[in-house]
Length: 543
Image (cartoon, rainbow, N blue to C red; front, side, top):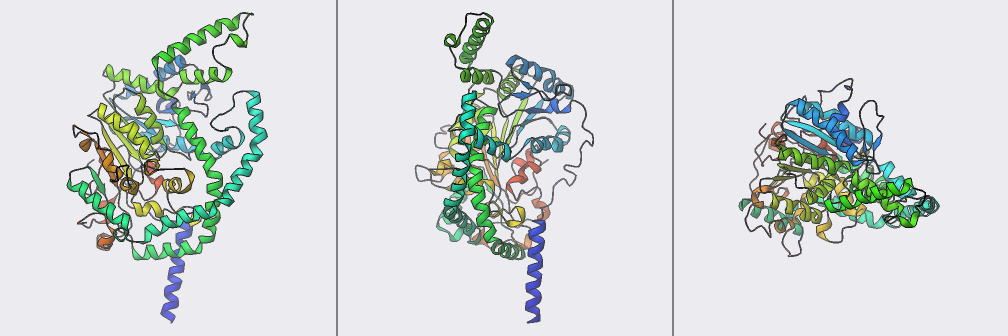
């Protein structure tokens, strides 16, 4: 009996540590990653590496004497890049540029932190890094949803703003009502995800089919890889105890996240459009520039009135933003420098919602990207299909890498002492924050979504190659999920928990740089090509 009480006390102690400290991390391939930092930021370095975009879609001037003023003229935006990023790139002596776009739920401080944490280390390699910082923090997006945005329209006039303020109490009431009324459904959806973590993948009907389909793809030479499950018994026991201890709080947390998160998510989606507004149509640019000139001349006379304007006040403001959109101007400048060979290679990296922005870029640009790296992609499979796949077929030398955390890690992600519902942001999106009406509208970054049913009944990933007559996509597309668990090579779980047909144990030291949470991706060495593709059991990628 004494031994039993001692064991219970040990488990309780482990749970207490787990709830207060969270999980440990797997080893880093480079333990010094992130140590190289400036204690005092050099003057002007932000403007040389960062494209910051405000909530209205304008680029901010980050030069020390400009106080982050918004640049509202397209010609001035181009001059800004020509006076900051591109001269610094030329001075670096490099020929390769990496464009990194962070995900949602990042306010300005978090967005800039990505830059400060990584830019010096990236500069030690082949790439010159450029970071896109866009306003996706929860508080700013939620309050924009609450006070201003109504059914896709953000007010531009005094009347529109008054309408937003007057209806804000009703928006708040609707969010509270959503939190209360949808709680049973949210709990049910999350419980289904929680069960997936416990039942061996090969013991579930859909899971067994997915494992078989994955193994067929690997035998067929497709670039599809997943790491193995090394979850330790002690970790699973501790996680199970903490799950049940915090279950009532999880229900409350699920209610709040659903009620007050969905509006913020919708507004984050709106801001991805502001960051890259639309196709940079040359004819549209010329028409709008002509209209701006005409109205500027008319406004200097005393005879003009509102009825003489070809565009409404709102349309004029939208046109101004379109013509001054910083990210399209920058990408176009990259294309021009590729033509002159001053830029020899461009790699784009998107994390989470950053992939939604990059999808808009890929649909529009004629710039040639050597590598497209998506980490924990929050974009939908349908968005990927209509954006990335056509781009890859237009540019057969491009390589695409889709990186996911292991499905067990995805559904079992824990934050804030295990109080919110478990699962990564992608799980929350699929379960309640977004509204997928078909399998194709679920998130691309979740490994298991790749093996859900396509319209033909085959796994979704098969449909990516459906119209690939040349067979080039087979060598261009790479899909990888990392391993999960802290166990050593002799602690690999039984075969029924694994996706690989013949898994070979890999020691924990060889599983370095393995993300275990959705947010871990931006802490990994995403600028190293060896990180993008690490075949199963091969250990660290080639540096």
